[in-house]
Image (cartoon, rainbow, N blue to C red; front, side):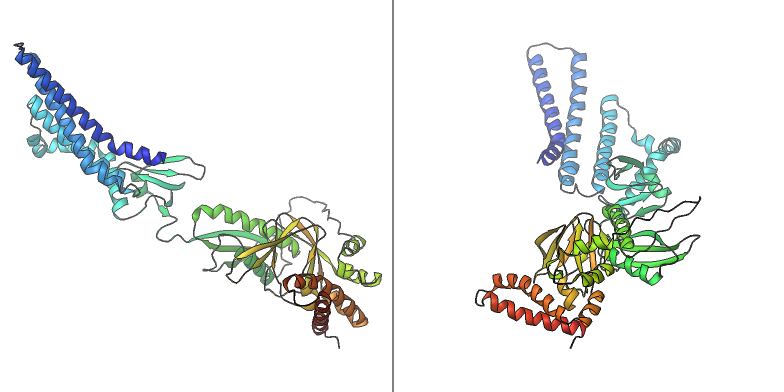
Length: 474
C-alpha cells in the first residue's frame, strides 16, 4: 500500500508543480494589474515581470505536458524496463524545446539556424556527448530487441544480478547479497551478456562429484541419478543426467546435470545435491577420495557391536519370538544407515525387502492420497520401526518415510530370515501372529462390523500365506 501511494505521489508531482507555477503566474499578473491601476509604473520592473511571467508560464506548460505525455500514461507501464528510458527521453525533449523557446523570447537568441547549419557545433556536441550517446542508443537497443527486461537474471563480465531498471544511461542490477550494481549501458554491448532466465526460465545446474576407483561406475551413476531426481526444485523433464568425465589421479570424476526453472534456487539445489550425496555415499559404502600429500593413519569408526544391535532389535515386538541364536543371525546381518534431514528413507509404492529400526533421530510417515498429494500420518522417533511387511512378505512400501533430522537406522534384510524360516517353519507362524495383532489394531478402527478376534485371525492367515510365498516355504 505504501509503495502504491509513493508511485501515485511521484506521478502527480509534475501536475502539482505545473498548477503551482500557473498559480504564481496568475498572482503576478493580478499584482501588475493593481500596480498599473494605481498609477505606479516602472518600465524596468514591468519588463522583468513580463520575462518572469514567460519563464514561469513556459515551465508550467512543460511540467503539464510531461504529466500528460509521460507520467500519467507511462505509470500504467511501470513494470516494463523501457518505461524509465521513455520518460527520460520525453523529459529531455521537452526541456530542450523549452530552452530554445526561452532563449528566443527572453534573450532574442534564435538557436535553430545555428543548430541546423553549424557542422562544427554538431561535431563538438557529438564528441563531448560520445559516451552519453553510446549509453543512450545501447539502452534503446536493449529495450527494442528485448535483450534484458526487469526481473531477468543476467551475467555481464564478472557481474551477476537481477535487472531492476534500464534507464537511458545505466542498467541497475540487484545481487544475491542485496547489493546494487550500476552498469553503463555500453558495457552490455561491449561485453558478453548472458541472460540466465530468458527466453526460457529453464537453467542447467552442473556440479562435479568424485568417487573412488573401487566403486562401480554404474552403481555410482544410479545413486547420483536417484538423489538428484529427489531434490526439491529439480525438474523431472528434462531428466537429470550423470556423466562420467574421466579418470583422475586418485578418483573417478562424475558430472551431475539437473534443470531448474528458477535461477534464484541455483545455489540451494547445489547445496542439496552435495549434502544428499554425502549421506547416500555413506550408506552405500562409496568412498569420496581425496589427494594424499602425507602419510596419515586412518582411524575407522568402530562398527556397532552385534550385542548392541541385538539388544536394539529386541525392542521390536515381532522379533521377540526369535530365539537367541536366531536373533544373533539377524543382528549379524544388520547394518546401519544414516539419512540427512529431508531425505526419503523409503518411498510409497516402491518394492522393498528391509525393515528399519530408528536408533537415533526422527522421521515422518507420509501417505499419498487419491489426489496425489502427500499427507502427514505419524512421527517416528528413536525406538520405532517400519517396513516389517516388506521384510517378511515382500510387499511394496505402504507409505513414504522422510527423515526430519540426521537419522541413524538399523536395517534388517530378508536374507537373514531365509535360513531361519528354512530350518524352523514354526517361526513363520509366530511372526505372522505378532504382525497380525499389530495390523488388526489398525483394521479394527477402520471396520466396526467384524470383531477384533475374527479380524486378527483372518489377517494372521493372510500374512502367514504371504510369508510362506515370499520365502518359498511349503
